[in-house]
Length: 214
Image 1 (cartoon, one colour):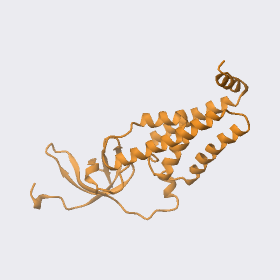
Image 2 (cartoon, one colour):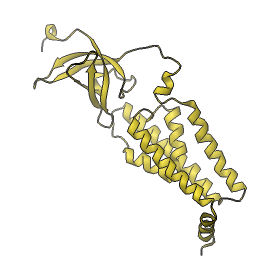
Image 3 (cartoon, helix red, strand yellow):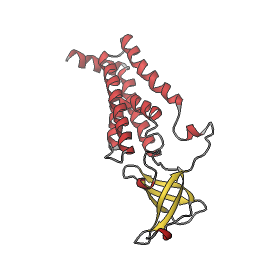
Image 4 (cartoon, one colour):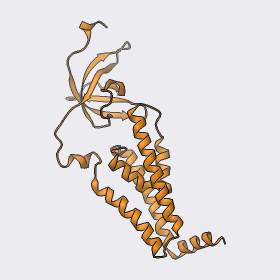
């Protein structure tokens, strides 16, 4: 394609499908029409990583097989309303949930309701999980191999979910994708349910038998 044939008209649309693990997705143009394939390489290097529901402007061209694809793309800059941070997963109140839980567990240890090892597990797993989210975000920015979502959920299930919640809010990572968030809260609920069971007489008896070696 010569210089005169390059597309110069910019269109606007919304990313209605995005495979973050593979770095590509599809744009639905404003007003409808054929979906436009877009790759992470089509966005400015070093900018914000695309996500589903992002509004973008782009130039379009046909590839050698006749498929419509973006030649270049950029996020549409808009003025954020007070509620926009909530819609995009930025919920400061969730920080309080993670911090409160990490304070609650040591308090239960101090009251003799839980063994100290449980508090250690939550703190260590939260640190490890936060680090896993941070590494995954850096890998996403550099378009390198990503940490599987199943691994992040497994870390959360085994006690790292407070650290995951902190990472989602502080690092703005993995806080938009609805299916991921649903799976995250499911794993957190399962973990919290196990902790609540530990506070029951049967759970307390089980923990006592473990710590006493019986």
